[in-house]
Every structure is written in structure tokens, then in C-alpha cells.
Image 1 (cartoon, rainbow, N blue to C red):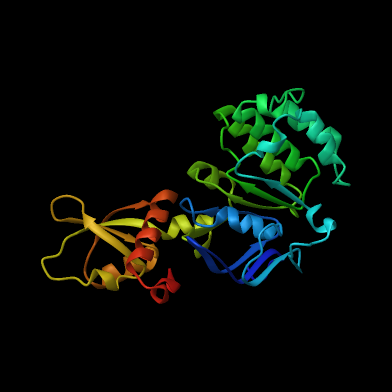
Image 2 (image 1 turned 135 degrees about the vertical axis):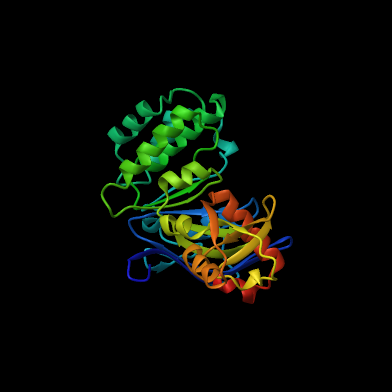
Length: 308
């Protein structure tokens, strides 16, 4: 990722609150790709987005977007290049008609494309004559996504974008986001709990757990690396923890052990050296990998997590 142009960069970022600490965060988001942040609730995903917009200020470290440091008083040109979809809707504009909010938003973005806005409204089947407070959660989400995309932002920040969407609207959203990325110079940073959404969209996956980044992975490599390996239990004692990428193990039937590794190829080579044959193997799903990382963080010290 170091050789690619970086759109977002967090350097030793920390933010402390009474019941939560974020960081230290070190993260780079490359231009032209979709990067998904995955983690349990309360991990700091939404807080990270607010820091990228200058809404929240870190206690230490540097937040850079488009190569410039983000500050609370950042000039308006900086934000005009960003589209942002919040996790939750703003309550104060519920009495406003959707089309009036679109007119208001249009004043702030020189790149606003009214035809694109109308196209997106048609694709998502949004009635923008309704007041926002009268819309269903799904319709309001579709409207707000159209609003975030209408000025063709260079950087699109999506916080749980499919929240409230029905399956048809979800598929439309996936298609719209793929189209947005076709030019090759647009970037999306998203947070999502939906495994299939991340698998369909993301090029890179960031695991964030309890305010810390536990790893950044290229998606296809991630799924190749994390595997369940089923082996026959040996009568002799085996130091399973020495297996490359070892995460956990559990019985899986008579004389069978299920091993979890983050380095499948190296783990198989190690097992062969021990004279242990792999009986079967399966790729972990994204939520399974997250669960393993959460368990590892709870069991191991930060210094031992560096290689995960």
C-alpha cells in the first residue's frame, strides 16, 4: 500500500474519553480502492470518520486527507471533495422536505450534478417531495446516499451504508457504488457489519477492535490466509501454539482437532514437518476472523499482537 497514492492517513492518533480510548491509530487508505473498516460496536469507526471531517479533534497525532492535515477549522474546499453518509440521520431536519435539503446541499458543492441526483433518486425510488421525518428509515437512507453521491466526491465516507435497506435497494446500492468507482480515481472508506457487503465491495479490510487497528489486509489474501485445518489428533504431544499463524483449536469429533490459522500455507508446511496430515480445510468467514481477532486481543498482550 505504501507505493500507492494515499488519500487518508492517520499517524499515531489518540483520542481519550471517560469510557473509551481510541488509538494509537496508524492507518493509510489508498486512492482508487474501497477500504472497509470492520469491528464490533464501540470500536471507534464513527469517531474515526468524525476526525477525518474535522468534527472531532484527536488528543495527539496527525489526521491527513488529500495530503493536508485536518483541523476543526479546515477550509470549505477540503470538505467539498468529500461525501459523507452518517450512521444515523440528523433529527433536526426531519421537518424539511427532501428536495429542499437537496437544494440547500447543492449550494455548498460546486460539483453538484442535478441530473446525477435525479438519476439516483429514480434508481432508489425516492419521493423527495416527502418530509424527511415522514420517510421510512430505508427511503431516508436512500435519499441521504443520493445526496452524498450527487457532487461526485473524490472521497466517500460511508458509515453502515445499508442500514434500513431492503434487499432490492441493497443490490442497487452495490451497483451504484461500483459505478462510482469505475473512473479509478475515486476512493471509498466504509464501515459495515454486513459480511456480504464487505465481500462484494471491499478491496482492503481494516479490523478495528476496541479503539485499535488490529490489521489491514487485502481482501482476497485475507480469505486465502485464514483457514480451518482439520487434523487427526496425534498420540504424541504437539505444541500447537508453535504452528505459524496459530489462533485457536478445538475438538471436532473423534480424534480430530480443528485448528485456526492466519497463515494457512505456512501452517500446512509446519504440520507436514511434524508428520501430521491435513484431513480437510475450510476458509473462515469475515465474522469468524473478527471473532478470532477479538479473542486474541483479549488473551494476548499488545506486543504479541503485532504479528497478527
